[in-house]
Amino acid sequence: MTESKRKLVFADLGLFYAAAIWGSTFFIVKTALEGIDPVVMVAYRFLIAGLILLVYLLIKKKNVLANLKPALFLGLMIFVLYITQTIGLKYTTASNSGFITGLFVAFIPLFLKLLFKKNPTILEILASGVSLIGLWILTGGLEDVNIGDIITIGSAVTYALHVLYSDYYIRKNLDPLVLSCQQFLLVGVLALFSALVFGLDVLTFNRYAVYATLFLALFPTLSAFVIQMFAQKIRSPLRVSLIFALEPVFAALFAWTIGGEEVIGYRAVGGFVIFLALVISGLPVRLFKKAK
Image (cartoon, rainbow, N blue to C red; front, side, top):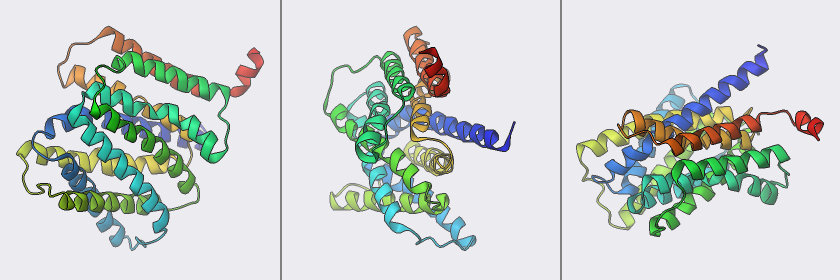
């Protein structure tokens, strides 16, 4: 295996890890919200991750104030993403939240065309469509649409924008660690400020909420987002989005194993269809042209 192929494999493995760890969070967050306000959880989650990374960067004598403008823009999108998803999850089901958030796969090719003037290939469009079909099968689509579902749409839109603009900025050779740290701290500060402005209780939470917030800070936030930043240096936004579409697949796997839920056949089929979309996205375009 050549060095370039090895890097692509490691990038994909890192993105699979991120999708898996994010998939593990749905039932964790849903339960934790019984003991902590959603905005407060977002604040502590990102502040802890940002402060840990800040200490590391200061030890390494990195300029933590470099290129603040891109970080502010990306951080604002993460803020909207997690606030809408977390608040929405308080009013809707985990399956509805997973499906609506997964709609970011449909927004990626659309925003590529509208914002970046890039035309996705036929295979990329096909892969996105197949992924959405799999997502619908896996989650059962939308049931009993409510205010939480409408709020969660904001997370799908900002999810897509964050993937695309992260790709745009990271390819300008910005330091992924510094960029991640700046985003985390911005999101944490914005969430904490919002909580204080709206008079939310920032000091009352149960033990499970504390453990859940620490887990969310260390793994789905600190490790997964940093890995995403590094992986996007060499992987296309559409490839990233299709791997991230496996997030609800991993959520189902965690529910069937750790959660002790019954294995449901149609969800397994949906997960396979999403994986098939990933395979389609990796096919060389020349094979498709030859088939014509």
